Each structure stands twice: as structure tokens, then as C-alpha cells.
Image 1 (tube, rainbow, N blue to C red):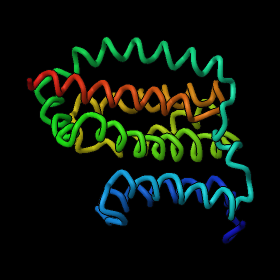
Image 2: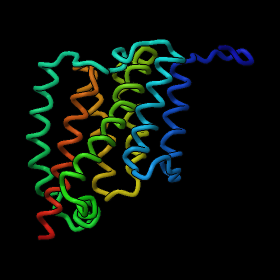
Image 3: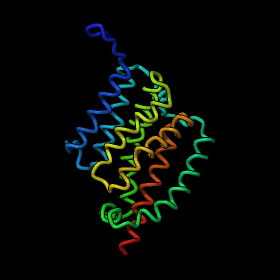
Length: 207
């Protein structure tokens, strides 16, 4: 598509626009369902999946919806979870982390983990699936890994500062694992473990 002599590639342009607008809709609390996690599933999974299938006419597997290089993916998942278990054991007991995460378990750890899973599956799809694999075709994987981490980091504003400041690196790390494994499933598993373990550590800190 060319406008006044400037060529705009449809896919990366639409990915960038969608990657900006959907978090803004989320930020301004447009309630689509009674549960925030389900809202995010609609915004961050259903909408980009529909764009891939209907507008791009591509397969979801081209955007990380597959097992990919599963042996490497599992290896990165196990290694990252071990490292993060140790880090979170100490960081997760900080007062600001406990104050933020203890309310997540108010309805029980099982319910909190389920909602986190629904939420994070969609988050990983839009950033480590839709955004990463679309942009990598135009700017290469190295730059795409860092670019997809930017909106991911900004989406953490309002969380404890120590967590938010780390997310540009965490987001890039998730992107690296997704690219190496050709799947967003493994970053999702890591992210779910990190969130679940953080909630559990916060719960123990207030007992």
C-alpha cells in the first residue's frame, strides 16, 4: 500500500497498530465480560487470531501456534523455571510484591492460577506469536524480539516497580525462547509458572 509516495507494508503496519490499540482498550477498562482475564483473551487472542485468518489469510501455526522445536522448548522452559523459582523466592517476598499479589489469591490459588492461565495464554500469543513472527519477516528476529518486548513492558505499568523495570528484559527473553522453539507455548509455560509461583510466595508471606 502506497500513500503519497510512502510504501506501507500491510502486515507489519497492522500488527503495530493493533499492538498499540488493544492494550489501550485494556488499559481504559472496557469491560467485555464480567472477568478481566476473559476480556484479555478476547482482545489478545481472538482479535489477532481473526486478523491472521481473515485479513492475512495465514495459518496460526506460522505465528507460533504449534509445538515447534519441542525438545529445545522444554529445555528452555525447565531451565528458566528453575532460575526464576530462586529469584522470585527472594523478590516475591518484598512488601510491594506481597501487597500487589496477595489479592490475586483472594478467591483461592486454583482460581487465581486458572485466570492467570487464560490471561497469559492470550498475552503470549499477541506478543510472542502475532507480533514477533509477523515483524521478524521484515526486520529480522533480533530486532523483532526487542520490539515486541516494548508494548509488553508498558502493559505492566501499575505493577510493582521492580517487576515492571524487569519486563523489557523478561519480554525479550520470552521472545528469544519463542523464536528458538518456533512456538509461543513455551514462553507461556514459563510465564504461567512465574506468575503462579509469585502468587504462592506472596500468599506464604502474609500467613
